[in-house]
Amino acid sequence: MTPALNFQYLEINRINDEAQAKYEPTPYDGRIVLFKPRACYAGFNDPEYGWGELAKKGVEVIDIPAYPRGMLNEPFVQILADKLKKEIEKEGNDA
Image (cartoon, rainbow, N blue to C red; front, top):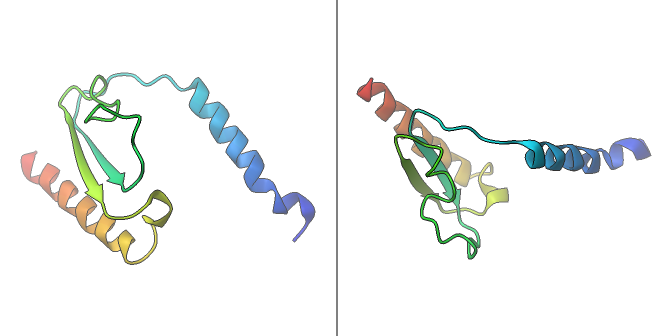
């Protein structure tokens, strides 16, 4: 692996941080489903984790029993997939 590729993730992190700092969300006419991993959210006293003002039809928080870095690894990815599938099917039935 070339030295430039070894540190490519640092440039990606910088670009992501810059994009996040510039992003200004706008209200959404639907409901937001937040899949919340297990983590330290000590600074969040808001049960909607900041999404309430944006989601005009509310926010549903679904806890995932994994830390953020593990959500896409077995067995937690299957738990996430099952919960996501359930929410998609629920929306399909409400339509």
